Structures are given as C-alpha cells and as structure tokens.
Image 1: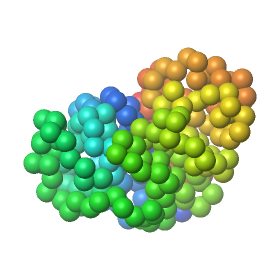
Image 2: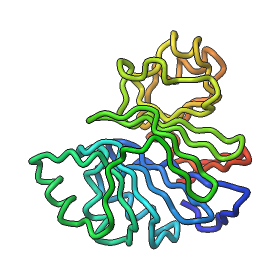
Image 3: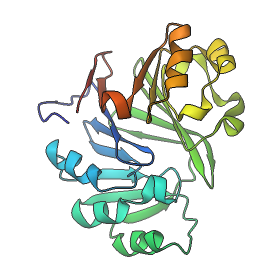
Image 4: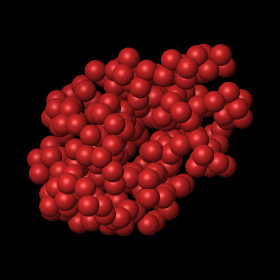
Length: 226
C-alpha cells in the first residue's frame, strides 16, 4: 500500500487487499478510515502500518467466521477502532472468543440498511448469518462487495449500475455477465475460468492473488498497490 495518497472531500480512495480468506476493503474518507473484513491472517496489519493507518473510525465484519474475521483480534489489540459492526451471532470457535476478548470499542448490530461517512454511502443490500452484500457509492463512483455471498443468495440484488464487483469466483457465470455486465471484476483467487468469462464479454478482471492488491479512487483511476 502506498503512503502518498491524500483523501479530500471530493475524492475517495479505496484499497482492496488480499489478506487470506476474504478480501479486506479499506476506505480513506475525509472523516476517517473504514475497514470491511479482516481476512484470516496477520498480513492485514503489515499493510495497514505500511500505509500509515494508525486508527479506524469503524470496522464492518461481513460474517462472523474465520474467513472474514479470523485476524480481527490481532487488529483490535493493535489499532484503535472506534466502532465495530457485525451480526452479533456468536460461535464456540476459539477465534471468536479471542475476537470478543479483544473488543474495546463500541460494538453494534449491523441492523441498519444504510450508513454514511465522509461522503461515502454504504448500503447493506443483503445480510444473513454467513454473508453481507454491500454497495458503496461516492458521487458517480460505485462499488459492490459480495462479502461471502454465493450465486444462490444474490438473486435480484445485482444491478448494472453498481460498477465494479468484488466477488468470489464461484458467483460468476455467463448468465450473470450477460444480464448485468459490470464494468469490472476483482476476485480474490486466480479464477482462470472467471477471467476467461470476463474477457469473453470485454470486462476487465483483476485477480488479487495473481495481480496483487488494488487501489482506486472515485475519479476513476486504479493501480496495483502491492
């Protein structure tokens, strides 16, 4: 992650990071840093420190499982977090006990359908025990993150206007591409089949495991960030 990015009220900077398991998303807004999911290994900590991130306004956890929240306990004990939003549906897993023990910030049930911070609007379009489907908008910029959502649970929530999708490989199909035609795809794995489907329809597809993390801004620019 670069350290030269400056966020203003007119520009949103987003990082999509591979941290084991699910991706992690970091939004740098004029009102603070917002993190979505922690992944399952400690590489997130290194990336946050490298980017000069020393505190978070809020952390949103898509699903309380090891894939999305396994590294949270390390994060919460190392980086000040003002608020944490999750489903509050606990498990008996050891990582969850560490997660609860490490919480020193205010914890909220992710029950609202929308949030707004620093000009960024966050819409929770779908939420169940194992997944959350977010839409992020900032001016004309639009990003959809299907946090744990499989093909069988997205149904009519997709929309052509969402722009770039961050999505697991198994969600992508010819039918979805024909129906929704996103402007771009970001996938956590290699996804050779997904890349092939995207190229067939002229859609840019970025494989995080192959091509690295992604940084892009609301003005339309994007680069690999590591």
